[in-house]
Amino acid sequence: MSKSYDIVVIGAGLSSLMFLSRYILKNKDQSILLIEKSIKKNINQTFCIWQGPDLIDIKKIYNLKPRHVWRKIEVSYENDTICRDISPYSYECFDGKETLKELLNQCKNKISIKQGLDVRKIKNNKGLIEVITKNVTIKTKYLIDSRNKISKEQYESPPSLQQAFVGNEIVSKNEQFDPEVIKLMNFSNNKKEVEFTYTLPFSKKSALVETTFFSKRPSLIDIKKLQKKLLKRYKSTKLIKEERGIIPMILDREFINNNNIPIGLSAGMARPSTGYSMMRIAQWVKSIESKKIKQDNINEFQFKPNKLLEWFDSIFLTVCYFWPQKVPNLFMKLFSNADIKSIIRFMSDAPTLSDIFLIILSMPKKLMIHGLIKKYVK
Ligand SMILES: Cc1cc2nc3c(=O)[nH]c(=O)nc-3n(C[C@H](O)[C@H](O)[C@H](O)COP(=O)(O)OP(=O)(O)OC[C@H]3O[C@@H](n4cnc5c(N)ncnc54)[C@H](O)[C@@H]3O)c2cc1C
Image (cartoon, rainbow, N blue to C red; front, side):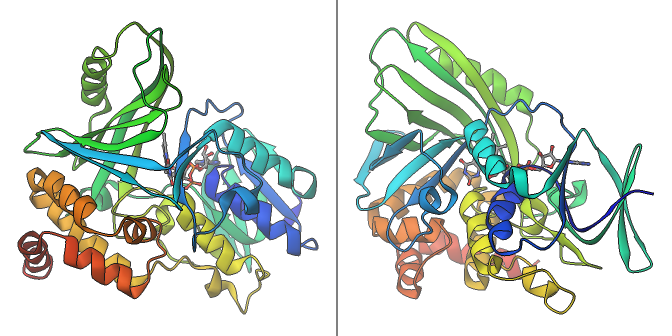
């Protein structure tokens, strides 16, 4: 007979660990088991977020140290470059491996952890949930599930896109980067997909350089070929590591069902217009961390994105889906016209109404109206 738990959490990734590190502080009387399928994870992620006034202070709350902080950003397309000072805001990057290690350390002695268990099936049985793996079945009252269950149909139904990227951390003999300025988007002239380079310079001689696409059906093999070409632009470099990923840019999300709480990507915690999820996860955790999961409040644990932002993102995605060639100019207009603080709060899911108003005013109106019409008139 296997032991039964109050809560089983599937997946030791970002959403589960950010949740657990805060939830266990107030809820010491519930037995919690964390299950992870991988035994040794090869984590090459870099998590970046905006920080500053009115945004959740990730460093303080989660006790994390950023690897690098930037106070200037650059966006460019063809011959135009926009460089903006973002103080008092900053763009900060956290090493993925260190982040997950620190979060896991914060929960380690307060929960049980089982690695190497690949969850195959979930079954409800007489008021309990059965979490079925190859060799064991574990019973629990409540389940928190961070597995990505987004289906092929969801990924492929308009205006869903996927943010796909291949990046390399490079070190060179020459000084060829400016560590003060993060190159957020350097757009390519691509008629079929939104394509840009994202460069995080850590020093004058080292940077993470990524080829990124907002794509309907991305191919990491093709992106890797373009990335190889891109790297040739840099002189005498050595590759340190590679990071790659495909993040959903979709509006669909999973809902709580039979004491099973979805979190992470399937629950809509990746912002549809950007693919970023760390701030959304932090916002969700903040909204529930003082609560204890019980039968009568379980629906309060559902992740609910801001409705206005969701509507805005749906129009933005529609534009990216149908008119990708116009997206570089949309961003150039936004970054040259709008107040940078409004843009940052908007991208971090924490805009005021006036921020939203200002963003709308800074967008190319005709294009956004086309997006709006396309969204409603099928
Ligand atoms: C390379 C990369 C860079 C990113 N950069 C940023 C960024 O800069 N800023 C930002 O905000 N977001 C970023 N993201 C997006 C997002 O923050 C990450 O994808 C984040 O890891 C999502 O957290 P999660 O908990 O939903 O999923 P994951 O972190 O993927 O966690 C899910 C966990 O579940 C485990 N699992 C899956 N199936 C099973 C199973 N059957 N049984 C048991 N365990 C299972 C997996 O092994 C994994 O550990 C990035 C994503 C990638 C891939």
